[in-house]
Length: 346
Ligand SMILES: [Zn+2]
Image (cartoon, rainbow, N blue to C red; front, side, top):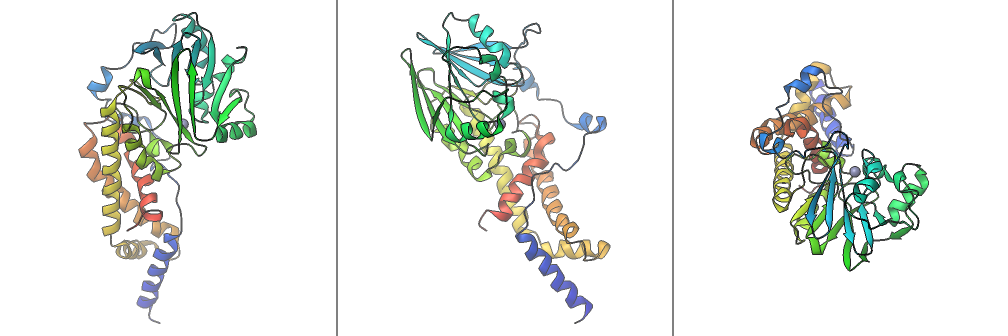
């Protein structure tokens, strides 16, 4: 066997081995130096102008969005509550300001807190629930899978649910209704759509951040296949107010639509660049420098080339449309690349 043949065989083998190898979503840089942080473009002016005014002594702000629904935010996290004639239903208790929710509600209504709903398992959205511990008769409603996880975790900051359901539940209280529906776009134990029809209010945490690109790796989704579907699932609802659980504003249908457009642009671009790339040529080129022993390094050259070309193409299209694009785009591309390479059809 000639060295050339050996090289080609090895290249083919590397490519085929790598078809079965998974990579996790890793940021391209291990850390951000002050120079790196400074290199990001400032938050878009149109987004900055919508930051909520937070009273520093309170640490949060409350906005009445109609139909008995109020949204609470500290410009980092968001939760909400529904006031009825027979008590209050709270949607999430973030770790950051959860302890202030009971007093924030008491400023709006004399009605007692009767129900707390968990959108999903994550600490940052329900890790403030300990502040509700002393509320007598409180129902904590969550998916069965969420309750099972929390039981196993036994975290004192996340009170255990005492009412669970598998996929759908309608809550009726004081003449108002809340529709809860299970989805799988974000967390491995499931995520809820929380819908208050009378208020045209829809809350779905960690998928759409109005004004911004999604957070790292498409909001650290554990299921990009389901994430791709979430926008049409949201758009099927009749809503005026959308709460995504994060950042500096609430949104509406247009925010769901633009996040869908961004997500599909990333996905389609990565797919085209990946599927058209001459991978053997990239591996052969890298092998000229490092030889053929380090198969991981050679495969990384392929993934890096797709990532860099995708970011180079996508960033100019989106940098002026959504905030934070340059911060997280490489991570979005990596998530799409894992899906395109290992899950998707050609
Ligand atoms: Zn989450």
